[in-house]
Length: 229
Image 1 (spheres, rainbow, N blue to C red):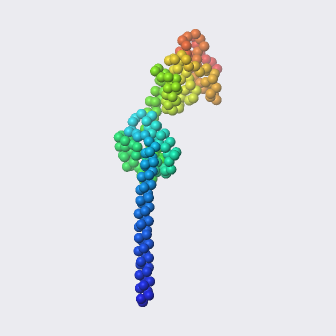
Image 2 (spheres, rainbow, N blue to C red; image 1 turned 90 degrees about the vertical axis):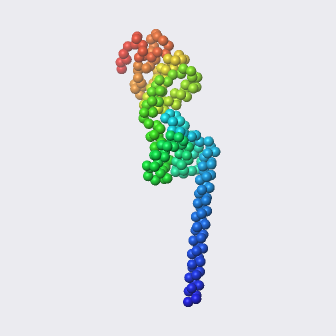
């Protein structure tokens, strides 16, 4: 009888010891997780990520996404941690928007980075904004800008006008540049060779060979005749 009691007491002590070890281990893991999260955030902030206030200008949203993704290339973090770090940079209207949006997302703590980018793009890269930027691209002129600045502005705005196509972009730029600088010229043949189907080029926008103002195009020439294929 005494032997059985002693054995039961030993088993009880062993169980208590294991339970205590489990508590200590869980505490250590929690502390490590807190320290790890703190280190992760500190490392992220040390790389100077931009903040985003929710500006309607898509350039600012694009800059946030590009800069943060560039930072993530040198950081080791999960897709879910990326969402936490990126949204921490939201301020003002962007913070209010994300608070309201995330409240309606199921399992927001498990939101993956790719899904977050879809939601973010849906808000700050709407079709209306893209159309506005496309119009801005089509109306772009070089007045007050250097050649380098003009090319950079063209490249930035061309992102919002993919429907123009590469050849159409070149012809738009050609017409605008000729109109404002009289220094820039893309021969029609060289522009056409950049596509697999030259006949798709708007023939009205090709440079005119008749006498007239430098850089004027076929559609604005009174001496031109209809083009027949």
